[in-house]
Amino acid sequence: MTETQTVAQKGFLGWVERTGNRLPDPVFIFFYLIVALVAVSILAALTGLSVPHPTQTDAATGAPIMIEAVSLLSAANIQRLWVEMPATFTHFHPLGYVLVVMLGAGIAERSGLFGASMRAAVRNAPKFLLTPMVALVAMIGNLAADAAYVVLIPLAGVLYAAAGRHPIAGIAASFAGVSGGFSANLLPGQLDALLFGITEAAAEAIVPTWDANIAGNWYFIASMTFIFLPVIWFVTDRIIEPRLGKYVPQGPAGEMVKDGDKPLSADQKKGLRYALIAALLVCALWVFFTVGPGTPLIDEEAQPEARLSPFYRSLVAGFFVLFLASGWAYGAAAGTVKDHRDIVRMMSEAMGDLAYYLVLAFAAAHFVAMFAWSNLGLIFAVNGADFIQSSGLPMPLTLALIVLLTGLVNLFVGSASAKWALLAPVLIPMLMLLGVSPEMTTAAYRVGDSATNIITPLMVYFPLILTFCQRWQKDYGLGSLTATMIPYSLFLLVSGLVLVMIWVALGLPLGPGAGLHYQLPAQ
Image 1 (spheres, rainbow, N blue to C red):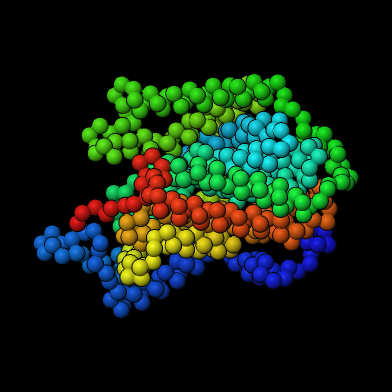
Image 2: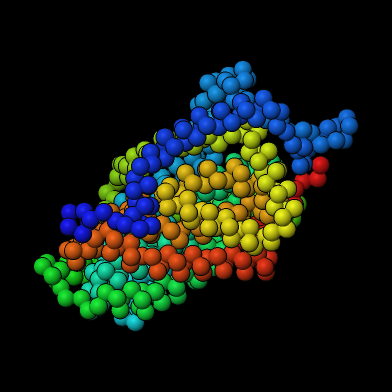
């Protein structure tokens, strides 16, 4: 540890670091919130807190059904807690989505497909296009989850040094793309599956028939990619790199450039060709299922706007098959997969990586479920919607405030799923009552969740990024990295806010079959 790392940080960033370090693990945050939720539910039930249901009416009288707060210590809820505990956990929507996608992504990562793809994409980029190429691959690399952090970010430092540029500028640009552009991508992936699982659980509190579409933010996140790309390019080349000055190699830095800039081997190139063929075949298979005989992924009897629902809901399985086939094809050609036993081993290791997420999901599942049992989420949503409606606050401004709230919470709770499990049960129903679709609320959340990832030491990969920087500059400390990333964070946050407000003003669709507005079912 260098001397600069041990110096206590001062000011706002120092306060964030000290406060964040005192927070318990997110798993226990959920358990503490459950305790608080029980207390609030008891108080709400004793005071007779209630609201009329916005969509359901009494069949006999035609009057809205009253939703009353229910104590979580009632006999029925205590029984439900203990009897339904296994179902509460296993029926948590994000759990199945994430497990299925990660079974395939684990193969693509461990076979070397993700790493080789990222190297091939950025290694031969012209010097003046190096930053946008690194940023673009970094954002797309989020499909590879952890691999983007451990492969692309240190590789970017090597590529910048080999091009005669400051390696820390490369690390900063790739970190901004991977983490600051966490939700930006050209394709939906495992993050979409995770977030929309939570969105679905929250939306069902008010409309039980609402189904998630993991492509529901596709157009929005693709637009984020093209908005964030020039922002990262500008900040890197015009603000960060000039501040860093000219880089003078120290110690073994020259060897790092020599080793890290090696071209792909013949086997790796062959593997990438095979992976591309496999990916195209999977895409063709899904097209066949959608438009071929019998159209199994189209519901011919549904309303026109709902006919593609089976296709959207099949995308989780589609990404599993895509990652499985392309990862296996790459590994077989590159020599990293010898037989089917390697595939099973890679899947098992991928599930092992999710051990912490499973523990977190257990706690989050019970918080979300108990919030629904108490009826407090719906009561808060109805009252919150009434307040916003009476205040006359424009919808773009409301969504902008959600972006800022998310960015603030993100400084203390790094997990995207943990934050959304906390915020979604209130935000999703509240905005549905105001005519805002769950997809739009999720999109606003994603902007705030991305922008401040790169400036909080509580982000799990922050110490790793600091280590990458110290390979090139020994005295590079925590404050140095934070100061480097603040301009990225501010520019990404502002550009994301502008994008949200423009999107709302124009009323653009967020993805296939996912509009900005939502109309509640008739009572």
